Length: 111
Image (cartoon, rainbow, N blue to C red; front, side):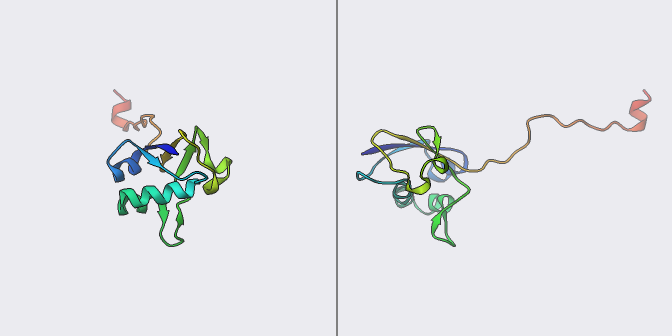
């Protein structure tokens, strides 16, 4: 079966592409997909997706399977099916997007 994978943020940087298509055996799970992607794209991606200390998929990555969070399905044991789209989204930091208000000095307020 074929699974379409979309990469975001640091995961995209690790693989150097926006998306990939992976051939998996029938009955394959999200864990199998992660293993295949790590083998295909090398150490940089593996470092993003796998918690090396536990040798388990990283709990910081969000996996959306057909738009649904894998954690709300069967987690890493969620079965893949032909044609499904999987989005791999790492944590993203940054500001709120709201400009910070600058405190005015006493001399500025008097003018």
